[in-house]
Length: 453
Image 1 (cartoon, rainbow, N blue to C red):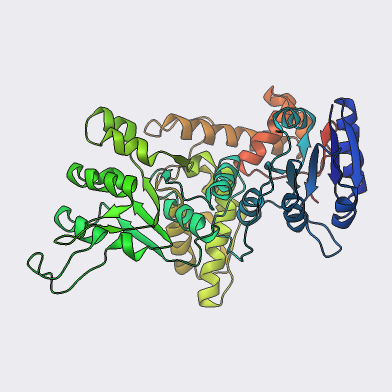
Image 2 (cartoon, rainbow, N blue to C red; image 1 turned 45 degrees about the vertical axis):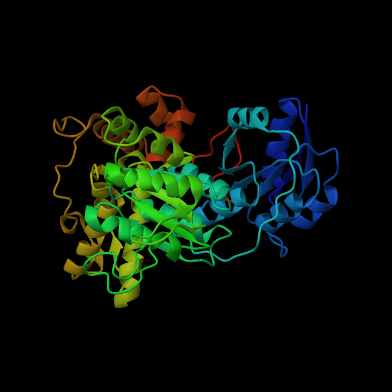
């Protein structure tokens, strides 16, 4: 049994959460503002459920910062209906135990309380302003954003895994921008794009005259990234001979320029690859010791087909960026967005960006329709199977199509749609969020919270 402080300016939501907590055997304590929350915080409070957006000059981030700056701070869970990469990363970075989107189901609340740790030491962090660079509120991207927030201030090596085009460099830059090294340099090196004979010089530097063409000294990427972050992209394509030298640099924080003497380096290393390093190790194409040295904090970015709810927000982001450079707004119509959702996106976010930019340039009208969206792929129909598509993508597309058709047939009534699909209503709502399907105004009983804050 725990005493849980509920901080939210919405009285109905406070009461709903309080009722749920009471039913689960816990003691709720209510606060309508940040200042009231800080005044109510005492040694008997075991956990805090904190709304992010509140009036009165003190939002949830500031309340979290103040709670976590104290001694013996209780675990804080941030709740918001307006999740973004920036506030998720910041909340986790400041020490939040978790960052959840409203509405919070009763079973989700029960499971959350079982996971909560005991009181933890305070965490101090410098303040900063950072651009929200990771678009997406799907479950998969929320996991990525939380991992960034937890790992940003560490000097531990991060290994970013994901298919080509998922945005691995964006994650690396977010780790840099949101961390304590943000004022230092961010240096990116694509290990697959540099010839083997030049990679050592590119990474470790060289001294004048050490080889033909070395007309001057070169510091190299490790020293260029001093007090900052070195991003080693596509490290799975690095030749074996070079892997041994990278391993030494990571273990001893020493690099040896070509033709020179060993020097210290303090760059924080973030690596990335689209390849399965474990398989490469088994095939003896990648050093096992380097694999384990890199795999300290792995962050796996989901493919775009696995985060379908993010497709339309991403498309809107790319349209807005195109409009900002040309000064003319354009919009996607419903049929165009439906076509975007149906595509498997083998090229991931990079492919989506290119498709949207091409549609923006080639469409004279202010409204972009399905014929303007060139995905160069066959639309999946509910009664056909695309034999050359991978199974997860095909199943996800078929499932999204069936759910949308059921919702359309029921006039947006989720209860009736769930009955027709022979699934429970909460599962339907979860899948609607996953696939970014249209919301309705139906009031779902049995849910704690609401769809807007």
